[in-house]
Image (cartoon, rainbow, N blue to C red; front, side):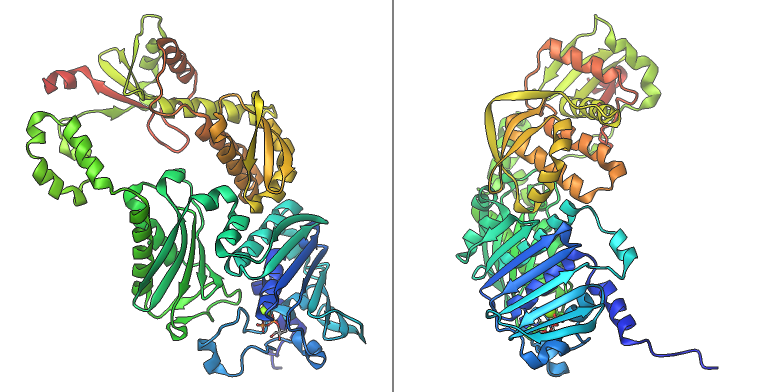
Amino acid sequence: MPQIQLLPDYVVNQIAAGEVIERPASAVKELAENSLDAMAAQIKISVKKGGKDLIQISDNGCGIEPEDIEKSVLRHATSKLRDASDLFKLSTNGFRGEALSSIASVSKLVIESGGIRAEFEGGVLKSKEEAALPLGTVITVKDLFFNAPVRAEFLKNDSVENSRILDCIIRLAMANENVRFEYRADNRLLFCAAEGSLQARISDCLGASVARSLKEIEWEESGIRVRGFISAPEDLQAGKRNIPYIYLQKRPIYNALIAKAINQAYAPYGDYSPISVIFLDMPLETFDVNVHPAKREVRFSKDNAVFSAVNHAVHNALQNAISYPSISIANTLREAAPAYIATQLPTLNSQLSTFHPPTQELFPDNRIIPLNASYNSQLSTLNSPQTECLQIGKSFIICEQGQSMLMIDQHRAHKLILYERALQALQNGESLDSQELLFPEIIEIPAVLSPILDEQKNELKKLGFHIEHFGFNTWQVRGIPAHLRISAAGQAIIGFLENAKESRENDMFKKNALCYANSSAIPGGMELSAQDMKAMVSDLLSLQNPYETPKGEAVFMRMPLEDIKRKF
Ligand code: ADP
Ligand code: MG
C-alpha cells in the first residue's frame, strides 16, 4: 500500500506559519509590511494582550480588489511578483505570498478592504459581505495560535510581546519617515511618529537624547551607498552590545557580516558595539532576498565589497567625529616616558599604527600573578589593624601581605562586593537599599522598553528605584539604589529592562545583580581615603571568592618580594 501522500493545504499552511509567524510580533511585521507595500501614508496598529487576543492594523493604502480578497489568504498568492526573474528586482517588502495565508491558518482573520468584509477561521472562509468601508485596508487577527497551542505556550508575558511588537514597528518606522505610525497596546498609546524628516524619525524611535549624539554616515564605494547614523565612542558604555539597525533598500535585515564591519571600525576605540542605523543601497541584481521565509536574511553577490563599504563608511564617520587619537598617544608617551624613550619617539611615532599595549612577554622576568583561591589562608592577615593601604593612580589599592605586594583593582573589587550582596538580597526576596533624591531626575527610556517598564515597576522598586511615569517615553526617578550615581541611573534602568526582556527567570537575579554592580561600583580614577580602602579590603575578604569578578576578571595581583628585589 502506498505510504506517501500530498499534505492537505491547511497542513501545508500551518507548516509555513511555523516559519513565518513565530509570535505576534512577526504577524505585526508582515501586516505592516503589506501596508507599506500598499503605499499607505498612515498605519495604525492596535493589540490586546500582547497580540495574543487581538492584532488590528489599518492603513490608507491602495486596498485589495474585491475579487482578490479570498485569493489573498491562499499560499503563494501575491500581487508583487509575476515570474522568477522578478525575484531579483524586488522593490516591495513582500513577494512570497505567504504571510496572510500563514496568519489565516493559525488565527481568526477578518479582512476589510475594497468594500468587502471577509471572515476566515483557520484559513477557511466563514463569511463574506459587502460593507461601507473607508479607503485602505483593515486586517484583524483574533486568537492568534488558537489552533496551535504549543506555539502559544512559548509566548512570553504580554509586556514582553508588546515590546517585541514595538521593536518590529520601530525597525519599519525608522526606514519610512514619510509614513505616520501609531501603536496602541490595550488602548494605551505606546508609539507615535508623525511623517517628517529622517532625523525626527530617528529621534522618535531611539529617543531624543540618543538621536542628538549620533554622527552622520555618508559614503559610497563600488556602487554601494551607505548612509545612516552612529554613536561616537565617548557616548557609549564599554562592553554593551547594541544590535545595529540595518536596512537594504529600506528593508530591515539582519546580517552578521555588516555587524562585524561596524564593530571592526570601532575596534581602535575600545570594546564597543555602537548604536547604529545603516541604510544600504546597491544595484538590485547584486543581492538576493529570497533566502528565508521571514525575509530578514539576504545574500550579497560580493560580500567583501559590502563589508569594506560599511567598514570604511563607519571609519570615516568616526574620524570626522573624533580628534585623531595617535597625536594624543604620542604626547602621553612623551610625558610619561623616561628620557631615553623620549629620544626614540620619532621611531615610536612611526610605529604607532601598529602600537599594542605592552604584554607580559615584553617583561619576561615579571611575575605579577593574579591571586586565586589557593591563597585563601594567607589573605586573612590583610584584615589586621596593622595593614596599611595606599592608593595609586586613584585606581589601585596597594598593600603588603607577608612576602608580597598585593594590588587590588578598586573598581573590580567594589563591583564584586556589590554583586555578591545584591545577589544574596535578591535571592532572599529582599529589596536593595535605596536613596531618595532631593530633586527627582527625569530620564528618557527608549520606546521599545516602555511596555516593559510599566510592568517591571515593582521589580525596579526592589532594586532600589522609585520611578513614576512622567510623559511620553519619559520617567521621573525619585529614588535610586544606595550606591548608584544619578548620572548612571538611566543606563542602569535600561540594563534592568533589557534583562527583563531577554532573560529567563532563573538567571534574572544574577543578571540584575550584575547590572546593579556594574553601574554602581566606584570607578577607577576616584580618590579613596585610608578608611575607605580598609573597609573595602575587609568587605572583600568577607566574600567566599574575592579573587574574580562575576565575569572572571582578576581583582588581586600579587608581586612577590623576591621579584621586586630582582628588578633592582
Ligand atoms: P506578499 O506580501 O508576499 O505578496 P501576503 O500574504 O503578505 O503576501 O499578502 C498577499 C497579498 O494580499 C499581497 O500581495 C497584496 O496584494 C494583498 N494585500 C495584503 N495586505 C494588503 C494591504 N494592507 N493593502 C493592500 N493589499 C494587501
Ligand atoms: Mg506580505
